[in-house]
Image (tube, rainbow, N blue to C red):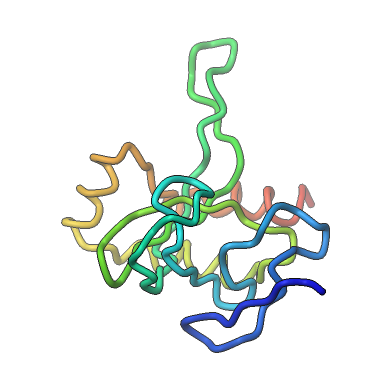
Length: 143
């Protein structure tokens, strides 16, 4: 029997595997909220259990191109724990709601300076609205 969980934000029952059987899902594909379960990536050792709000998007750094410029890689969701303040990055799954992803991008423009500073200290670069076309290309392909 497949594992399921209930989203701590919207209450949706969610299958732990994605449609394409990617690794264990850690966020709701409908609202993109998560639950604070990991102390370190994938260990499920966190005692917090707080709801983690999707506050922005970032690109996973994929190294350098032939000119020494950082190459933008996989699109990631930035989650912020509403209980303890932990910040984590999560892969976008194949069946995540694309409009919700775009809404997170729009919402991230209103992050306060304290959060922006905290993300910068963690070396997390929030994707800006000016990068919307790049995000859409990653989500939908070139048109």
